[in-house]
Image (tube, rainbow, N blue to C red; front, side, top):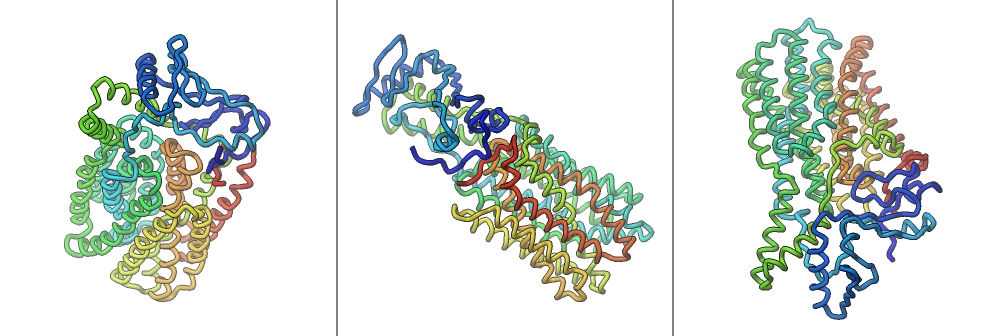
Length: 552
């Protein structure tokens, strides 16, 4: 038996896989108690499946089927009866950790003959690329608005010159915080109601929030409309895209994540100069109305968010129809084969899995994002204000922001291409990006002109590119793609909670220190601390209760 690509780590004597004795909650579970058991639930008519298996294997070369009380023994020695098909247990003998690690990760499949044809998967092909391009456009619109909000923030401060940094920081804090704080709920909503409804409702909330901001009564009023309402809408619109890309891609997931993530900075390239021009031509309130019209496009894009399960059914229907026509199979034979293959592929996703909050290996990411949330995306949003403090014009600040976004697009695509190779270590790349970004933030107080800020912009672009391209890959690889609604949701929720308060803290430090030098040193230090936390994951994964798949 070949060695598995993944091993479960760590393990104690209670159970050969999970150190707390409980099974890992996704389709790749290997055990509940010792001895290890592999349990496959098949919910189809058992007699029809057995009959289909016997007919097909009887026709194959060398295939032997012996009848025993309505059951059969497939070639390979595994007996199957009608009672076992509905609720069977294949018991793996006791063994050491090294022996158990030889077991390949199950793929929710029954032990059926290879002669049964299987329809192609919808992953990494066809409509999957439509989905990733659609998510790219959703990120372009939503994240482009957020990434250019540093310029909008400066314009709001000009409109309310008496507002303090701590008070005005609530606009940015609520926008970024609400954008992530409801991610677990939005992930569960996407699983239960479907991704289309999530994106459509989110787009309508974004439009409503921006239109309500048109009167611009006060800074706190804008914090509620431009911050809370728009932030919640963006959380609903963006979360389904992260989940769908994971569903639609397996082998090319790194490349798909790179394309998807490139939409964020691409939106910043377009939105930053656009907001400056709209403000010059129509004023702050007029620009809000026009931006709301752009946000309405999220509703159109949401209609293209086809669930993966639906696309898989479409691919399978086309396959079975083509097979029936080309091979002359009868309707009964096609139904039997479809029933067998369909039983293998049924996977029920869990909307929210709270067990991850007790997993030390996963909590590493929660601690890490508590640190990095101070700088991502605040380091970018405050760049325009720092540029103005050293005498740069709004046009120069807009040029710097556009440069950051161009670098970000190129580096995200580059990152996705490089780490799509199997030999690349994603965790090392993730750590290196945080360290480089932290060092760049700490050098900001030394910047005295536009060219100095461009150097800082390059380091920050590399940091954000590696962070947002690789985080989904790391979570999916280590905790399972079907658990993304929970692992990604809790990650984004923690980031949202931190983003809710960090802008006000940065504004408070800025008021005390009299500038942005000290806040940027603080943000850079926390980025490096986040890198150290991720670097310590192999040690933390040895603690009792840790459940993680580590590349061998």
